[in-house]
Amino acid sequence: MCRGITIIIVFFFLSASSYSQNDSSKHIYRRMQYPPGLLNSNFGVSIGYIHYNFTAKQLEPGFSVASIKIPPVGVRVNLIGHQINKWLGANIHYMRPVGWVEYRNIKGDNKTHSVWMNIAGLTLRSKIPISKKLSVYAEAGLGIVTRKGFKVNDLWALKNASYSTGFFETGLRYHVSDKWDIISGLSYSPANDKVKQPATYFYSAGFTVKMRKMPQEMLEAKKKAGYKFPQNTLQIGIATNSLGYGVNNFAAKTSPIPFFWGGAAEVRHGVSLHYHRNIFHATKVFSFDWGISAGFWQTRLKKQNFFTLSVFPELRFNIIHTKAADFYFYYSVAGPTYISKMVLDGEETGRHFTFQDLLGIGSFLGKERKLNAEINIGHYSNGNIFPDNAGVKVPLTFCVGYTF
Image (cartoon, rainbow, N blue to C red; front, side, top):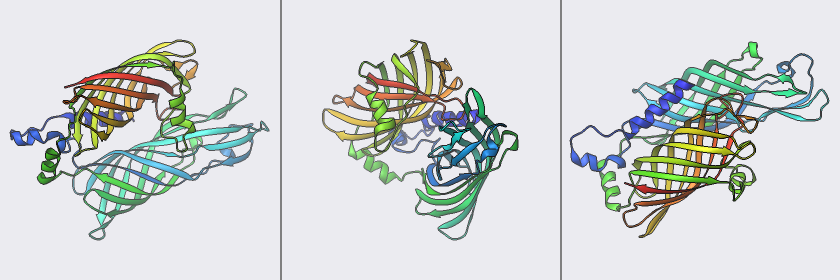
């Protein structure tokens, strides 16, 4: 999995690289065109029916269960894919159920015990055309299965597990346009008897978005529109829980459709430094940045000090444009991160490797958009690639910045 993360990081830095052509006109359009590292790449989402035959056999000797609930809905996110040539591509993906498996009433305790599970993978993909629009595809490669079990009365009833295995998928791909494909497939990860893990089946449908080179007339239209997208931004942020964790809790729990994450360990206050570099932007609304950040934090309960170092992608949506300022919403997910401590306020957060997630609103101010102001919330967790994943909740962070 760490190799997969390394590939993602390489994509970020390739994406930020300059075009090598001497033609100055191409330099003008550099951030309007998909960068070299992302050309012929893709991302996508599939949702469908997931099944693994969890039974009493997964329990340790001496434990019994009254009932088991296996939620049927799962999701697979294709984080990044790249078309190597006409016949061969590569994918890094993440697959998990929407709801966790639940063991209910273990040895008469009248409690519900959750089993967290996900599969991360690195696969090669090939396809065979059936017609101009339709093709059969197949994927095969490495899968990393992670399972977090549970204890009853301080004894393991269902143990944690983490292991590498094969991951396979086959299905149909319908070519809607040069940018969009619709896919339907069956994914399979074999059982592992050593750790009592059943085989996983995922029947799904979804879409893939492809990044193709834009024609010159489209670049000209972007340039004539005249909207400003600052290339570099430096920020300093102050995080504080003086206003509570209401925004975090709403985004993660109380919203009708949760759209962010919380965390069992909570930050009391902290300071963060961010550098953002824009590598692509559309005509008016969308832009894609990569960035690096460093954070220095203190926990709420035990006042533990720790720090984080991150590399991250950022999706920015400039929703309001005025003469004085542009206002935006942004989302950053799965930024590879080093976290200095693995136990915070008594919560096991996993290992030193984790991910940074950010959600915020902000503005670029002034005629030349040289000033920046922003408010965000944050989250650190390993996405369940390790069995321990309590998560870290970062409260409202107030940032100011300068662009150049």
